[in-house]
Amino acid sequence: IGLAYGRPADYVERSRMVSALVQALAKLDYELMLIPATESVDRWAYKLHDGRVDGVLVTHPMPTGLDRFIAERGLPAVLMNLRSELPIAQVSFDDVAGTRAAMAHLRELGHERIAYFCAPKHDGDHYSNVDRREAYVAELRAHGLDRHIEVITQEYENEDYVHELPARPASKRPTALLVYCDHDTRHLIHSLNLVGLQTPTDVSVVSFTESRRPWDTVVGVTAGTTPSDELATQAVALLMQQISSPGSPAPPPVVLQEDLVVGQTSARRTTFGR
Image 1 (cartoon, helix red, strand yellow):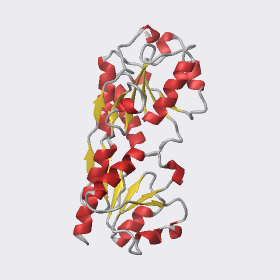
Image 2: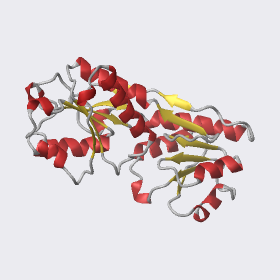
Image 3: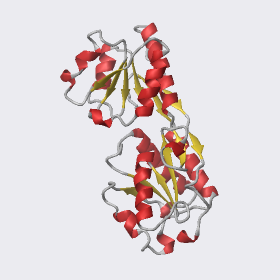
Image 4: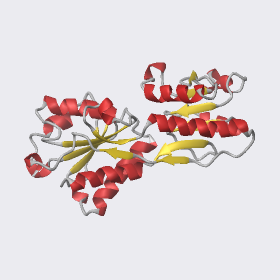
């Protein structure tokens, strides 16, 4: 089974997902073959139809033209944490519901001034970022908190936003940050600590992670979980359906729910942001 991905090989930071796929496929006597699809389609597409793979799993970012190539050739395939308008099986997460749960948690703790943070180079255009950002805005508006909407898109190397927080008037500071993913969270918490702001004493942080146990990634983080093992299990099941029934229509999309795990990075609003 091929695993196609559109970033250089050094991007294989998704070790949890790859490990989960290997285990799920091994139970069915299949092996996983990595297919870097980082160049023009003619440099790698032949690997998908020359008999070396029975099907293909595709992860973010979508290699250019791959979804159309799969749809035109009827190749057994599943998009993992990706979405496409083409008739291809896909497994994704309900990031809208996940964001609503995270925002509800922060409201219960008394937070109203909540900012959303995402580093542009980290999946800025992925559906999950779009859904989380739009759900964040919608949640504040639904509760009459439009004035507190603040979306920060800033590269890790530029820490201007964090450095200017302590100088803001108390009424203008966010008391909580909703962060796109655990990778962004690591950098953000480190930057906050450098300017003397502690989590959650000074500012609460809620994020999202691929681990079922968020503390595996950032100690004690409160996070919505998008577990890689469940993603892998569902994707492999959808792929096996297609391999066992050649020519059958693509299965309908599967949308997985997210669970909010409350850790040590969220707490009741403090004097930092009165």
